[in-house]
Length: 217
Image 1 (cartoon, rainbow, N blue to C red):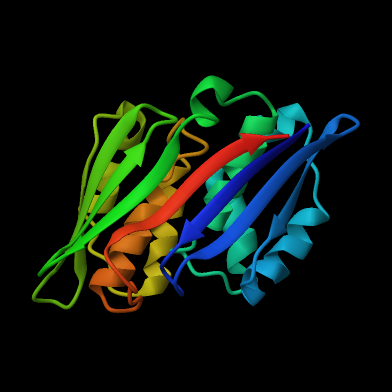
Image 2 (tube, one colour):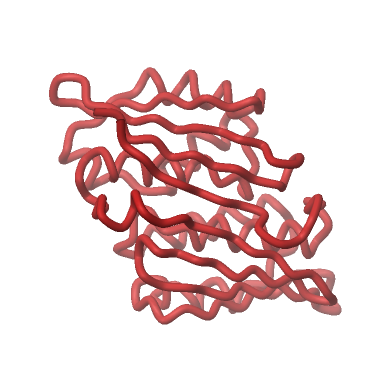
């Protein structure tokens, strides 16, 4: 069996489609990534050399995957590293197939003085709102609204640390390591909201800017 996570995003360009495939090889799980992005292609080569057993998957976090992606120039607002974690967990049976295979995860953007992302997160059963607002000190303040208790463990850490530079987004992935959620899309969504609000990323259009679907074959 192969678990597939398809990501269509309108961040770096319009309707960029990438596919993450995860499969079991003997007692290990491996990943293959197909993407038109040159940086993701470099990241993919490294990821394809790696393998994890079930115990290692439990110990793996989005932060671990993000650090690998970062070393190849992948930006913190890229959803592919998080999609890798989701694909691994789906293939390992740690995400309910009944939900994952019949739903779509969406990031919906509205832009005014503040950047607002409405997230549809059917895999965990939550929806979320992330608002990024500019401060007089030329930083971006983040507000996250979600009823998830795991995300709320690190809410204060993010909301009390306005972001000045794109590199500061590291803290978002670092803080997410303290939650029990290994596959959460909130960290990357925060990075997207910050990057758009700070004009480090120009969203090509509003509406659904990231759409993620999962399947098995």
